Image (cartoon, rainbow, N blue to C red; front, side):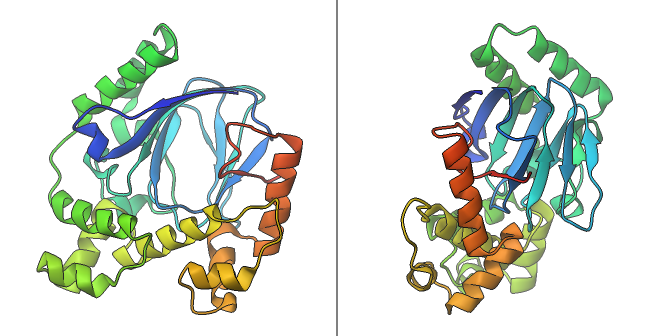
Length: 279
């Protein structure tokens, strides 16, 4: 697969981690993405994607792409034989200025691009992307489209500041301290996070802490789960195991088995850092 990414220019860089282009055959027909402290947008330029947001929800088809706010559980992506898209990896609060609705309404409920931006706007963007000269120009087209749609968002400064502290500490921060430093009530802070991020600050902190723990796992060597859980700030290994199943749907040992399968079957693949085979 070809993967090209870059950080956008200001003011988008305060809202977005990177813009990316992806094309090629997926390593597996279905990939599972563990829950993470990030929102994302995909503008699909190939055959439709299929997404399942939890085992209790039916798979849905997304022809023009999708928008996903910070998830609380794993998402299963079904890819066509060959996929082509551009997308955005948002900071947790970064998607809010581009949504016509509160982020809480989209929590664990991916929506199509048309539902967010409207059919004509999405059609125009996809047409411009289709005629762009290569990945880099396509990312510029996407960046320009985002800048045009950027709008003022009440409470963004508060959520961005508190969210940045949560991110910088890997989730190891007392939410009460954030409230005090911001000079707002716990209820107000939680409401603003739900509106702009889709989850509470406490839940976002859990996501950051879990992501840091998972990314510290080296599936190529024996793992001391108790030590890993302790270093990640979990009360005990049982708590860590419960959190693992909540965010991935897998036990820690099963997660390592699946990661090892990916690395064994597709060494050095551009997607080997987070998604897992779901086949």
